[in-house]
Length: 96
Image (tube, rainbow, N blue to C red):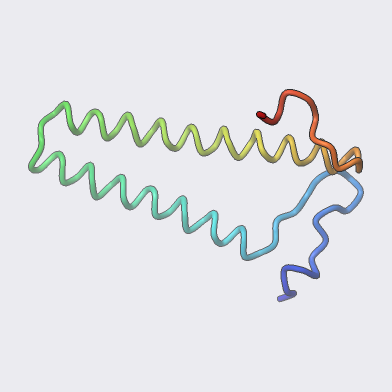
């Protein structure tokens, strides 16, 4: 396996590839999110109320949706910047 600094992140097509370590990190984060949500949901079903369980379930679903949306937005912005090669972020994508 190549070190992360030797892997090209821009092949000219505007599509950036993450180093293998980053992909493994993303998988671990997603797996740990599912595990934590499952443990908390199981505990709330056993010892908590129905409203607590429903809140945890809806919060977990919202968290997963937010993570997926954020990944898509950031990858789209970075692909646009990599495609232009200017290094400047498009307007309305950063805050002051």
